[in-house]
Image (cartoon, rainbow, N blue to C red; front, side):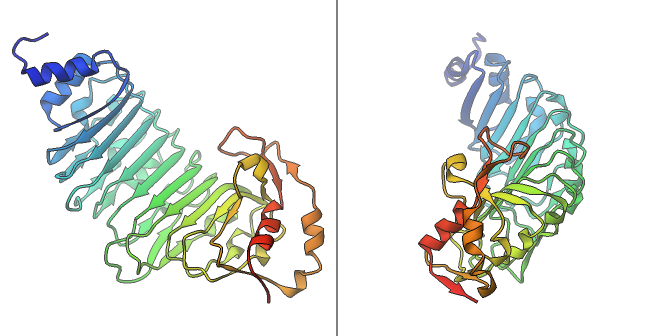
Length: 339
C-alpha cells in the first residue's frame, strides 16, 4: 500500500478491498476514484453517494471495466452531470442517476449513451431544466426500461423513442414543475412493445396531467398500468379498449370520485392466484359506474372461467392466469351506480 496515503484513504481502500459490490459515500473526486480502482478494480455493482462536489464526470471511472450496474446518489451541491465516456463500460447493463441537488441542473445530456451495446435500464432521477438527447436512447439495441423522475421541464415528450424495439417498461414520477402554468403534457412513444407504464406522484398538487394514450393502439396486452397519486379527478377507461387483456391496473391515491368501468367489463386481468395481490386497485370511496345495458350481462361475464395465457409476454416468472376476479372484487367492495 502507498505509504503516502492518509490514514483515511488507507482505511477507505481496506473497507472495499476486493469487493464486487458496494456502496461508498464521500466527495466525488480524483482521490475517491483512485481508491476504488486500486482496491476494487473488478467491482461490478457500484453505488456512489456524492456528499460534496459540483460535478459528476463519468469518464473518471473509465478504468472500472467490469461494471455491470452504476448508481449515483445524493449530490446536494451538483451543478453538472457529464456522461461522456460511458462507452468505455461496454459491459454496463444499468445506469441510475438519482441525485438531489439544491438547485436544478441546467441540462442533462443523454447523447453519450447512443449505441451502447449492453445497456438495458436507464434511470434519471434528477431535477434538470433540459433533458437533451432522448433520441439517443432509441439507438441502444438492448434498452428495455427507462425511468424518469424529479425533472423540471415544461412537458415530457418521449415521442423520440417511437419504434424502440425492445422498450417494454416506462416508469415516471415527479416529472412536473414545482409551479405549473398549465396542463402538463406527457407524450408517450408509439410502436414499441410496452408492457409496463407506471407513474407515481406529481410534484405539485395543482398539476393537471394530459397523457397521450394513443400508444395503446399498437399493443395487444399490458402487464401493468399504474397511475397513483397523480391528481387525477377522472380516468376514461376507453383508452384501454384496444387491449385484449391487462395484467393489473392501479388508480389509487387520486381524486377520482366516480369511475365508469363499462369499457373494460369484458377485459380479463391477472387472477389473485397469479399476481398474489388485487389486480385492480382503487380507493375505497370511489363510486363504480356501469351502463344499465350491461346489467344482464354481468352474470355471464363473471362466470367466464379463468384461463392461463401461455404466450402472454409478461415481466415476472408467474403462471399468467387471467380472469374476471377483479370485477367481482370491485362489485363487492365499492358502491355501484348504474348509468
